Length: 368
Image (cartoon, rainbow, N blue to C red; front, side, top):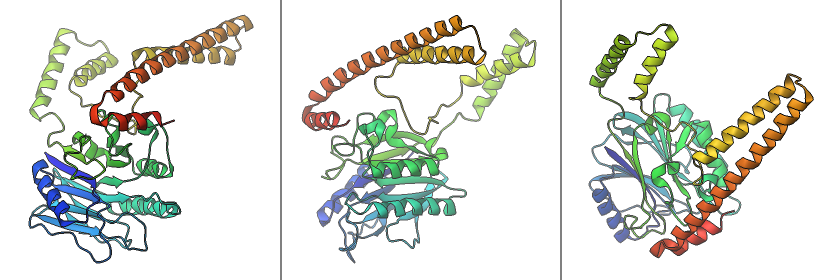
């Protein structure tokens, strides 16, 4: 098992760095990425004998943010990569034996800095394609972006984030079920993105909603835990083969399709499922009733279109059209009913959420 963390640090005083180093040991984090560390010019972070550090400070006349950097445990394989752009920090290493390129991302939100953010996105794409021929990619940082599945709206920075996800075929870890209703700020602005092979090793993603592990920052720490075993051991293959042989002895297949079907049924009991939908998950109100209503609506649509295309009699086309409208209205009614019920439950949980209740409530009702 190996842990990678990120925090928008807001650290300038040595005491906060000491608290951070202590927290790294408590959480057993191998690589820790920080943004907004408020180091400018030639300032340096306090050195720890068991940690290596690389980073880029901000100039007083440049983009705001206070600097970005990476800490990693001494004795590991992580090394800094030379970049020509001062906005970049790339490090190379391995996670559980998988070669990985890790990059720190910081997107500014000040007026006039969107051009700089676009430049960063282009550099990420170019660097990743140049260096990642045989390496996986992990991007973590403060994107200052809001995406539709989490916050209900998008801003220019989230567009850049989603472009990066699409161009590099990555997944947004914040969209995993274990991050549901967890935010890095009053909404979600810090993200972790991984490429596909590395995604298969992700065991858990934790956002420190309570703020106990975020060293007094106004934002919450993200920790990604990678597991060492992602598939069945080699001995399990013998079990699959044996079950298949027993199945063939009980009911010998009469044709090739049945033979393949039996094999697929046995393989299905052992397969590992992963999210391959680009990191997008359904809304909280989505359930089986909505799925059934949507499928019925789609089926009625296909039947009506097929009848019109085949030039069936007018009365049959009108009948199928009326059916389509009826299923469409039924789908809308089911969806609206589920949305209302979900919002009622969500608001009730937010208003009784203790010390974080008010903040979550206003973040929830302020989204479109």
